[in-house]
Image 1 (cartoon, rainbow over the protein chains, first blue to last red):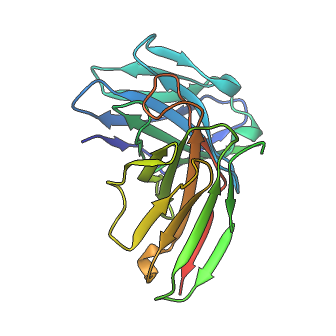
Image 2 (image 1 turned 135 degrees about the horizontal axis):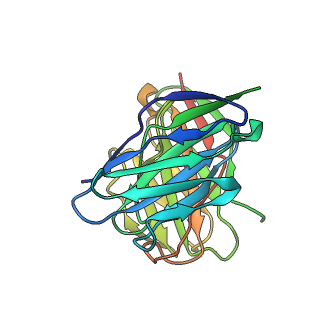
Length: 113
Length: 117
């Protein structure tokens, strides 16, 4: 079975500062990994995905994530936070490319002016 | 439509009542997924369809939960004899290709918030 942990249910950063949202997974087989963002009253939007190609994955809105097998991690980063990045972020793992995702509990990102 | 739509957006019901939640996927999307999201948690997989066929219902909590997609488009998630523990956000997603196909992306709807009193 797969599982996802996200360290920190709430992360606050200043505008312009580095964003780092942590995701660790467990999977008995090589996983597919995803980051989704959820804005208030909206559905989840795919930010980026790892599908066993490049380990450094670039997504929308300047976000990127690096797959580190040795650390079973897929942390999400952005060099400079914008106010519009304030949202909830979910990491998810799937072993069969999205037939059924296992989501982490989410991290709420606040961006301070 | 432009995106996945769900109705109603909010549903308040009394314990013991049946509820039906509707999902209207993006036009042409062949796969449809249902998730449940408790407050402060990530979405939890319930079931999914390829076209009208239900492929996996392993995530449905018990036999009070059922889903159908009779014509391969709109889907209904039905909860019978609701209980307070059923209160959650119920999310639907659809994808253009078949579930499990590499490169497939799930597009999520805004969800239905169900409150059981």
